[in-house]
Length: 340
Image (tube, rainbow, N blue to C red; front, side, top):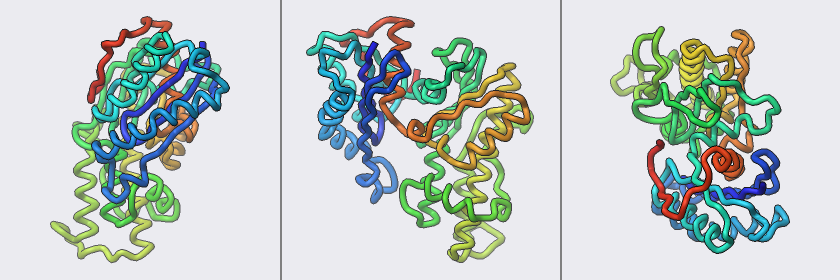
């Protein structure tokens, strides 16, 4: 079965064709990073207008690269939650029009569940329920328990900001530009991650916590850099200081994610841990999760770097399984800014 996937939940317009949930026939992503860079993050109205301009050429390109006509597609899968509501509606409207015109079944896909699927869609031995997943991105930082492969139950989440947003805000504090994740990751490789001992962004008592809060960590970085409400003077913005601050901040984020994820593994009795989302591209995060998993005897699933950010391959891939599991949706399928 060849499934056309469409993704437009935030600031990437994407389309892909995937066969039987695993074989990628095409993968097209049109990024809006340059449009939003001057604002320091995605602007919903700008994102929606950009999706409108490029959604049809992106779909056409995905079909052309797969060597298919619309009639050759067997089904259409589209992100319909969560995300920026205007952006979601652009992709959903295009998917409905395609499905109606071509006479193909339509299925809505949860963007967060698709990030989880992206981490193991190429693995010949998928994770075994019960397993735990961590989705960590610019808009989401959540932990899930999976008693079945495709029905996640949230067991931990951030109380305020997401990890990816924290990376962007700290990059802004350090005047590093947008997006913040890649540049902080690069600078941190040359920095001293122990110089500024920030606390991991965890909530609750240490032995129990699997929830996060990133606002305090962002504030701690701001105060240390500016000297505000601090015992220290403002931090001179030398290359060494910026590298050390980037490394120390990143280490706190990664350590918090690692601690919470493996506590969730212990609590659920899982043997497998799946990591998904844009922050899964972070080199220190990948290193620490691999180290901890090896020490504990837990299998960890990490996505290919190309599938950490928003893409339509994961939408088409999961859409294949959603069709088999629950059948198609009708044209009343709606978009939702929040998850299930």
